[in-house]
Amino acid sequence: MELKNLQGNTWIIRDTTNIGVYVKDNNAVLIDTGKGNETARAILELVSAKGWNVKWIINTHFHGDHTGGNAYIQKETNCCIAASYIDSPFIVQPWLEPRRVWSAAAPKRLRTWFFEAAPSNVTKVLNGGDKLEDFGLEAADLSGHSHEQIGISTPDGVFFIADALTAKSVIDKYKILFLADFTAAMKTLKRLEKAQANIFVPSHGEPCTDIKAIVRANIRCLEQLHTDVREACAEPKSRDELVSALVKKYSRTLNMQQYVLIHCAVSSALTPLIDDGTVRRVYTDGTLKFIASK
View 1 (cartoon, rainbow, N blue to C red):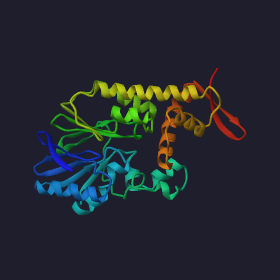
View 2: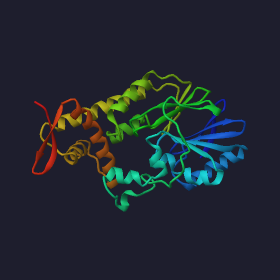
View 3: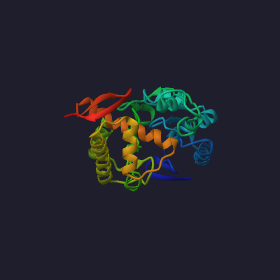
View 4: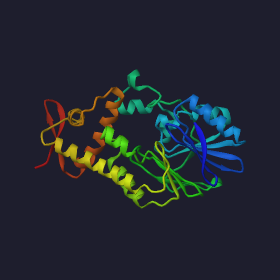
């Protein structure tokens, strides 16, 4: 891990999940905390070496690779934590997420650090358009990857865009991106296409000054998912059968954790097709299936 200055009072700790740091009067705000205690200890060592005190954590969303260091850092520093209204309960009570993706009490295989980070106490709701006034940080609605993901803009013109964008190399490798809300994700990408900042910082990847090309790549990926799901409904299929069709198309091999994530993405793309009448539901032998409308 390495602490590097991006611009002015805005810093980044480079890791598998990038950690933002904004400093004012030697008080620091962390933007996400990585995936666990080891990462959290390293963050505190880097920040302490600069003589900074952690006063706030802002979580862009509740996934364990973004909140995994919360509990350790909050215990060590007594800092406050801000997160969006919808994502906050999953940070305070992280057992909710494995139950959500499994639709019931989840098996141990899904109760890992990614789905169930250590719980921490959210002290402030920070939704899109809200500000952390003492530091001049502004939240932006980047919903889609989670139901109420936020990005954070600093007074230095640096925009931390969380998991709103996926690198083209990852798209090319996996084809199907995780989504909680397909329609919201498309709206977020359209907004990002017009967004202005001196530097954009994705949670996974290199900071950059121009994101238009990668935004377009993400839009194409979501449009392809939409098309794939619609075309797979030429014959009646359950959600599990839709997942199977797409996994076979892209020659994917999934473990249990990957399966429930792809299931979420497929369900997310199916929702607007049902709502606009493109796909209708049918019940066959006690199974809910979906077929393209005539």
